Image (cartoon, rainbow, N blue to C red; front, side, top):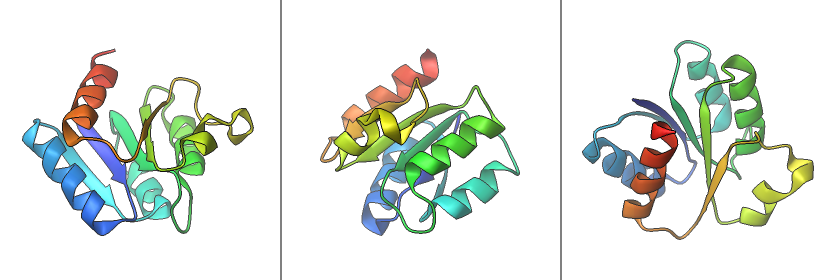
Length: 118
């Protein structure tokens, strides 16, 4: 299973990549939404794991564009601003999941596994 990760915090990005790699996932990581979207246009991914607040393109816009490219891609937001993602006006993809920071890496891996198994 291939995961596209968009997270602008370098330390957080490294921790997430390591945890997901250790769980057996292939992860391609970017520090902004625009670069992640450009990569998504080149190859398919099973899951988009994205922060919401990022430079260049926020996570909600990235998720909208991702689901336009691939309606079957699963989307999970990781954020310290859960209310932003849950706001209906934000137009996040309908089956997306929000994991609020701070979270334990074990919880992230569990939620990712559940989403990919669904």
